[in-house]
Length: 379
Image (tube, rainbow, N blue to C red; front, side, top):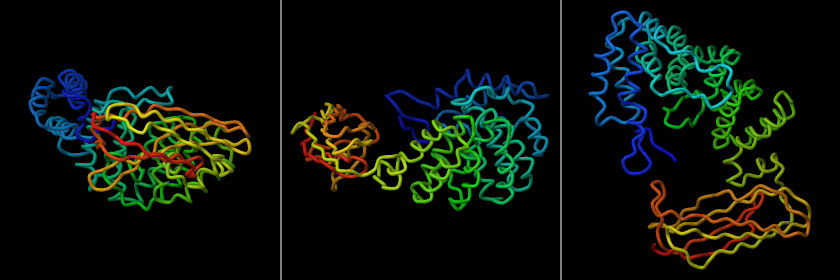
């Protein structure tokens, strides 16, 4: 479920902010900082919890940093030394994926930007290097890329070879042009390709997933270059073939939804003599499932990527959204029947449904091949 940077989402009463930042988590953080001489964990806990009301997720992080900062040395070099001394153990270096860390350990990144960006760049980057091995510093490297692009890029060049895969991932994730929740960076989108050229061959899925997500971002900006670069990487053979296949599919997922020919060709979904029929009920109510049946015929054996677009009635016109149906193989002369029940949720928080005339279009390997209409009724 998508959530905004305020950390709220889900059902009534759910608060990601409260889930992440509460008496238990703040108490644990206080115990970590208690190793510092003169740090009062009880004072920190009381002050921090008292300021949570009315603050969302990222605002609470800033507030936690405020409360930590008041008990640290004011000079940044000494502050950075204290922050490093209080850090928990590094995330497990034997893992290769899904070890993101805990949001509460973002504090060193916040303070690195606040107090190190202008006058202590190198010491601040050292701090981010240590901190990202506990929690990803992808948000906090970006101000350095904007303020000190060449110097920060030089540091990232070194980090591409770091033995810790969290540091290597930061190089890709922190330079993404469309990183969710994050502030924009002013780098030309082509600049980080020099890092991805190296990192695509990484042995950690956490890194290659970031590379794929970065390339997916770029596919919305420089789509032809993304396809060309992925084809080149495949030819180089520096990455395991299975992993390279996964990375390519993940990197091109948005381009495939748009039906871009180059992306589909690279994945093996080439245009052919394909026909199809799609059937749906003439009427369906909001809250029910739209029963979709697609019958695909091909004149030859052919890998097929079958997607469908729903056309929704809106108060001012229409809107379309693309959904995946199946990637499979059509056999010459043999009908391929695919079915799906698409729930038309009436309580979705991100896309409201309106009654009226709707439609469905089926595309196979990027080509529109069939369509049908239906009426959406009130629940």
